[in-house]
Every structure is written in C-alpha cells, then in structure tokens.
Image (cartoon, rainbow, N blue to C red):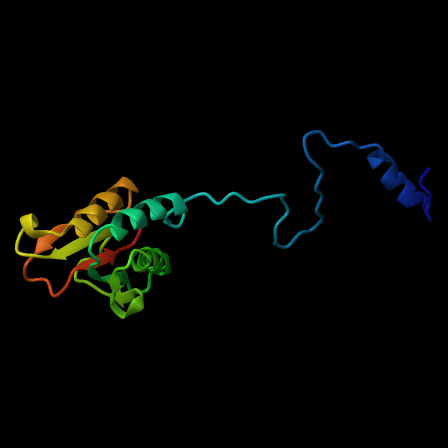
Length: 166
C-alpha cells in the first residue's frame, strides 16, 4: 500500500496506481520548454554518406594487388559532410598503399558546385588509364557515390573530387 502525506497527493496518485503501459512506457511532461521526450529520435532526411567496412576492405584488397597510384582528394569547401566522406576515402586509399596528396583531403572551390564524387584522371585518353584507377572508377558507382568521371590530358593531377550530397 502506498502512503502519501496529503489527501491531494493520494487523489493524484491513485489513478496512476496499477497503470501498466502496453508496448512501452508512459512519458508525461508538464510545461516542457524543449529537449527530448522520447525513447529515441529518428532523423528523417539526407543522412551523411559513408562507406561500410566490407566495401572498403573489398577495394583495399583489390588495390593492394596493383601498383600504387598518386591521387589528390578534394572536398567542397565549407561542406563538412563532403569533407568527412573525403577523409574516409583518403584513409581507404592510404591503406591500399596509394600516395594521397598531403596525407588527407584538401578543401577546394570550383566554378560549378560539384555534387557526388567525381574521379578526374590525368591521361591522354581512356586507353592509358591504369588498372588501379579503373578499379576505383568501378567501385565508386557500385556504392552509389559517384557522378560522372572523366579523363583529361590538361588536368594537373589525378583528382578525386567530393562534392555535396544534394
């Protein structure tokens, strides 16, 4: 039996005595001014892009069997989500034995705001693209990360450009 100091406390508590929630618990707030009143929050909308470990290990094992490459990974300046993905891609490429310019992603701006991930290969034409770059160019679309890539003889370096997700 519950003991209460005042009859008012008893009157308030009695209706809740034996209140067994079905399929969860009861959450009551009075004059809440913000914060979370839920067991969990489901974020709806664009989620940060990432690479799962299985896909990363598959690429790493393929690239380690081929001669290492040099690449410059660049992320859209001011876009923290793009930078985070660029950093993940740098770590995968470094673990594969590739030479990543400056050891990590650079921030850059372009005339046209890039979306998705674009591989730009410094080469005369697609017939001279190295096996490692071909593997990378096939792996990116398989994960749904890449937009159109291209070969450019005039480009200064081979570049992996990480743009915004939207």
